Image (cartoon, rainbow, N blue to C red; front, side, top):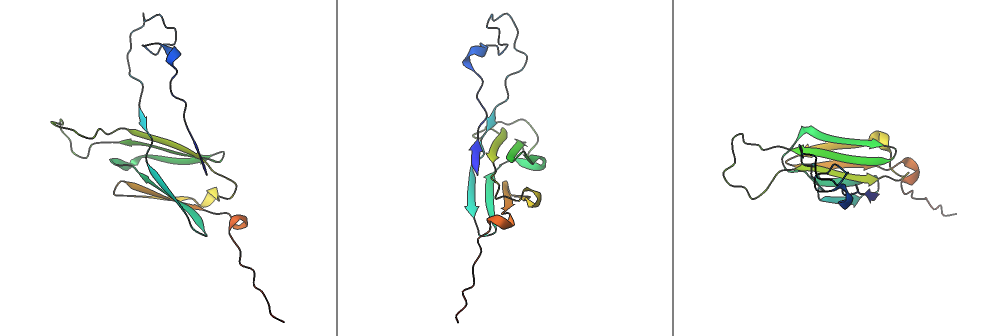
Length: 139
């Protein structure tokens, strides 16, 4: 499973992001920032298990999809407490990360669970990718 990255905005787009570089256009919206959630990936005989830290993300704000062998994790974190923050050491943000899946993953059987800010993805191996033990007969 190889990670894919999203290209950063180019320096040629100018201060205002308009791409024309003349600076006459007013900035109406700052570009959205995405954090790469830290992940741990484990391999078992049956599957790859991916665990991603997604603090402040609810099920409704989490989008996990596979398209053309590309696994995409996209999420938006929200404050658990309503009101105006007085002091902050941790700023919530959006998360984005992509991984290219190989042929050994059965994309039809992937499942995900979100618990206490940690998403666990089970990426089952296809039958042809699972190790097989060959029975040796003694004559």
